[in-house]
Amino acid sequence: MGSKTIRDSTFMAKYSAYSPYRLIRQESGFDNPIGASDAMARSLYCGMKPIASWDCEQANALPTGGVFNLEFSPEGSLLVAACEKKSIQIFDPLTHQRIHSVNGAHSDCVNCVKFLDGRMFATCSDDTTIALWDVRNLKKKIRSLLGHSNWVKNIEFSVKDKLLVTSGLDGSIYTWDINSYTEFNLVYQRVFHASGLMRCRLSPDARQMVMCTTGGLLVIIHDLNLSTLAQHLHGFKPNLYRLMQMSQQLIPIAAMYDHLFDLKRTENRVEFVSDFPDGNDAEVVSALQIHPQGWSALSRNISHDDRSEWSCIHDIQAGAGAGHSRDKGTRDRSPPRRPAPRRRARPRARPYRQPRPAPAAPAAGSPAPASASQP
Image (cartoon, rainbow, N blue to C red; front, side, top):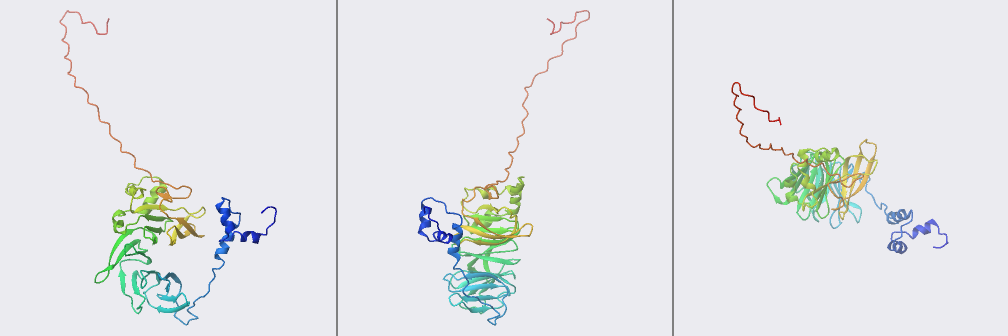
């Protein structure tokens, strides 16, 4: 640049998202100047503006209440909204028009929508049920799934296993085989239970399961195998194990599950993540979302003093953390190990010695025998 003075606007224009000048400097090993990242962000997101909106009052439709979840169909031709007032709203993303409404889809607010393929989707509700729907006939649901005992908050679908995965505030995670029907329900199994469970998500390839809790903790299951998860994690209590980690006091019933954190495990390996920024004493992690490529997780939490809310991004890739957990200021806080059992010393066997015979009493008038100590 020499001595030529360049205005800030011109300078920052060179650091736009697709600037060849920025790429050349990056390839040459030069650091970006202060403010370059902000300029890049502005160039990327300046075009993100709402182009249309829909209001139930303006459309003379029944009130929907809050929109709790949105889901696109796999080909992007439909957008389904889960609404507070027990309804499902379906929109055409191209025309921005509502094309169908299912009022009374559940008997309580609808929390989540998940497409299983191009025509079938599932919804869950605070009425503790999950419903299956076919977009070709929305007059009635295909089936209602019963199993949870409290509000059902989110739905995931494992494509490789063909299993529906649901979680609720009862702390349970269930899998449902959509291809195996009984007379009244699908074949389902409870694969895990954790006190204070808030949300459960799967990575896009279903190789990881991420859970968040009311204790300010994210639990990652690496190399996920849903068919063996219930067996491997039977009796495992994340909150109790976390208490052992933080207190550095051995809790035998929790230490039994040390093997779940072994980096050499080939399936269902557990990792804790609580690397929240300084000043964020996370307590209730109430929302969780996974990156489309499975690189990271976005969490939303309330601080311990209820004075602030935080949105945090966590790296959830396998190998990102070394050891049992990722915490503030340390990458590994391993639990205390069991002390080696003390072996009782065996008493040494003493050789048997035959007692010496008592010396004979000296005869009357004879001199006493000399002592052995006398010279």
